[in-house]
Amino acid sequence: MKRYIADISDAQIHQIDVAIIGSGLAGMYAAYHLDDSLNCALFTKEQIEDSSSSLAQGGIAVVTEKDDTFLYHFQDTMNAGAGECDEMAVRTIVEEGPEQIEELLAIGAHFDIDRHGNLLTTREGGHGMNRILHAGGDATGQEMVRALKKTVLAKDNIKVHENSFVADILTQDDEVVGLSVYENDAWHVYKTRHVIVATGGIGQVFRYTTNPGVATGDGIALGFRAGAVIENMEFIQFHPTGMYTPENRNTQCFLISEAVRGEGGILLNDANQRFMKERHPLAELAPRDIVARENYREIQNQASPYVKLDITAKSRDFLSKRFPTIFGKCMENGIDMSKDFIPVGPVQHYMMGGITTDLMGQTNIKGLLACGEAAMTGVHGANRLASNSTLECLVFGRKCADVVNDEFTGADIEIDIPKPAQNENVSFDTEEMMVEIKGIMVKYCGILRNGPSMMYGLHQVEQMLAVLDNAKLNSLRDMELYNMATIANEVLKGAIARKRSVGAHYRIDEGRTY
Ligand SMILES: Cc1cc2nc3c(=O)[nH]c(=O)nc-3n(C[C@H](O)[C@H](O)[C@H](O)COP(=O)(O)OP(=O)(O)OC[C@H]3O[C@@H](n4cnc5c(N)ncnc54)[C@H](O)[C@@H]3O)c2cc1C
Image (cartoon, rainbow, N blue to C red):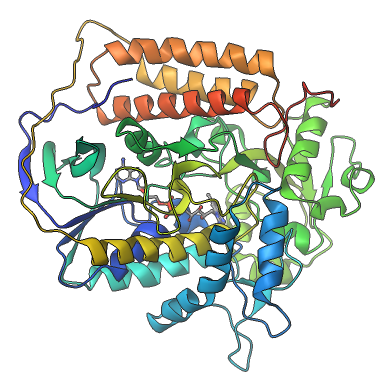
């Protein structure tokens, strides 16, 4: 493995107090809580809104209803996590969640309310109570990002760097000393002793994913190269209902929220048979991983590459008001949900693993913190409970800021600029290799897994990594490819090592039939 991927020998050098990588909920909420006296830089690959956070539809899970309790939310989260959650981490998000919602309201986030001004709550799969707050019907992430963006941009001590690609975290003696960043057509080094990784998920490593193009697993790969421990990489959540169109292969699938099934949507196969009723007592509202596997099975046994989601029992008026985003997206694709079936299939959706942190977001590398989807705090175990990830972003984003505020050191930093070994003569086709990785992951390490197939997939990824390890990475896209290959390798290794099926990790070579 390369330790560094960017050649920064000609970089301009800057000094800052704190660096945050990522402008999703985790990164922006952390930035917002950093002390006003700290000179902070928030780097993001594209525009501020280009993140999974902006796409969150269903909402944010938090105890607000009178008949709900922390214990119920705790138990639902633990059950979803299939025995793999860290109890203290779960307790932390559940108990500290309501305070973060108060803060979001205070900075001007508008959640949906009833005519008396009370927060509206709904229920999603795996939750025993109504506790999902939402905004704009199905545009919760967009509203939270809007409110945070306004607040963060208004702070004098935070400079947001859009179109800035962080390539490496620089360390000396297992301590963070800075970052290498490509922006404005040049390499820059930002010297700092505090880096918060909030780079989100890894979805682009798979052929079908709900994650946006920026989700190439960079932060986890950067942390890994810097020596951070990463864990549970095999725990990947597949969502049962990504919208299927031939164009979304290898790019991004639009999510059709679970709430559509919550409102009565049913799943049909090619023969227009409703299959979920005979597979699980909760039918279409069975846990996410079960519905995803059943959709996968139907697709394997029929001609069409998708199953059909039928919500035509509801009126056009109801659907356009309850699901304005989904309704609009379907119309863009020539689908009127009140009359037509929506073609859907299982897609990669969320990474439960990532950079291991303690209950304050700290990693094993001094000065390196992580939060949000890139972190493995122990909250989600082997399967994430719906709408808990946005909550985790807030609670642990804030904790990362608390650590930096307490431990900030402004001491001078001397950096030895590293020069990666790069071989100009090794050639490869970046886009072709990316597509190859996506294919390998979906085929050999997707919803149903078995040892020999995964070994075969791992062998192929290792061969690619061997090429890339020797090659010069000439572009940011090459660097994303290297990060994707690193992530694919770790997911495969984790999945091979975990012999027992648990949560979203489902092996068919341990006596199960499918
Ligand atoms: C379609 C969809 C719907 C969802 N719905 C819900 C929901 O209803 N409720 C819920 O709880 N969860 C939901 N999730 C999951 C949830 O949205 C995410 O887990 C969460 O928002 C992740 O936030 P984050 O801040 O960790 O990362 P993100 O929001 O993904 O932000 C990551 C940021 O890091 C930046 N970045 C990445 N690499 C680099 C780099 N090398 N250099 C610079 N910047 C970089 C990106 O540009 C981006 O700004 C959904 C996810 C998707 C995709």
